[in-house]
Length: 94
Image 1 (cartoon, one colour):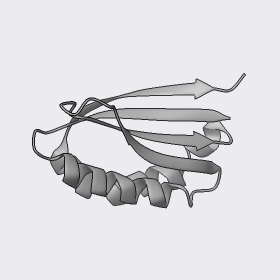
Image 2 (cartoon, rainbow, N blue to C red; image 1 turned 135 degrees about the vertical axis):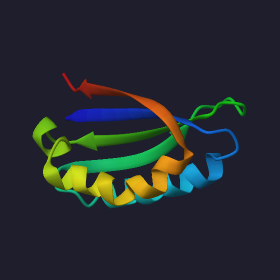
Image 3 (cartoon, rainbow, N blue to C red; image 1 turned 90 degrees about the horizontal axis):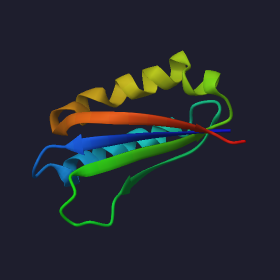
């Protein structure tokens, strides 16, 4: 199993809009073959401008599939206006 965490820096004042768009993306991601779960998380600090989209996958191939990419591309226009940058990490269950 693999866990993908994408930590997104959000533009000032855009947290609500970004979270709404990210939740839509995460919900659709759960319908991609091999995606076991996906959710949207924020750190406990109230002044933090970061939102993480975390998904778990059966395999790296499914996580990197064309269907997974297409799902992201379908939501990109809603996510992009509120977004500054991100970092991605992938964990593998051992």
